[in-house]
Length: 195
Image (cartoon, rainbow, N blue to C red; front, top):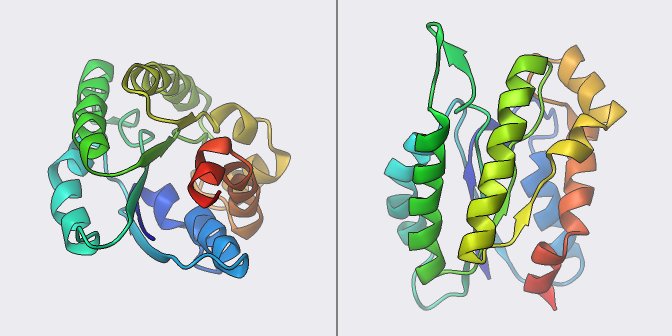
């Protein structure tokens, strides 16, 4: 099995001194359980849904040739909700349209999963991200794509929020990513790939 994790700095694991993030941790755990998988981290800092829409296919096709069992995990959205130059980087309707286009195409090619945007140390942006997450959940439901809304759990996580505040205001350190990894590892969507 070859798995591409596509998204932003949270997929990249930015802030983790162990350079694993949540994606590296769940793949390490799967390998320790005896599963033969290759892990590709395609997380890029500051990328929005528009950026990911523009690049994901070219990157995935190089890594998931048809003779292998390819899978995709997507996670993005926080950068869409960021205010820059007094305006939101990607309007909500555009975020939804970008996501729908990515998922519709990807679903025809590979099994896919999606993990929600994540909270940071900015209450106003968290409100926008939570609204986006709810809409992304609707899109995933409509397209029959498993969606993990990790936002509320991470917002309630003292470890995640304390590390975000102590770090750069956006990214946790190792313990925060470990908490998120635990959430993903126990998610039926992820577990269904390893039955």
